[in-house]
Length: 60
Image (cartoon, rainbow, N blue to C red):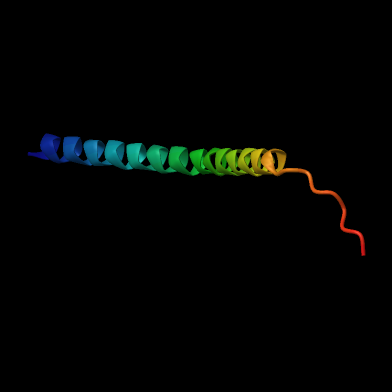
């Protein structure tokens, strides 16, 4: 019985370690996702500016 409780404790520790590793990996991934979104937004804005017809200045 004692061996089973030791194995259960060891397995629980492994699960906690895997959860911590997953949490750290997920946190490390977030800035690159944000960077990607910002980059594509800048590309979209640039394409819109490039597609806008040039207007002559208004004469007042």
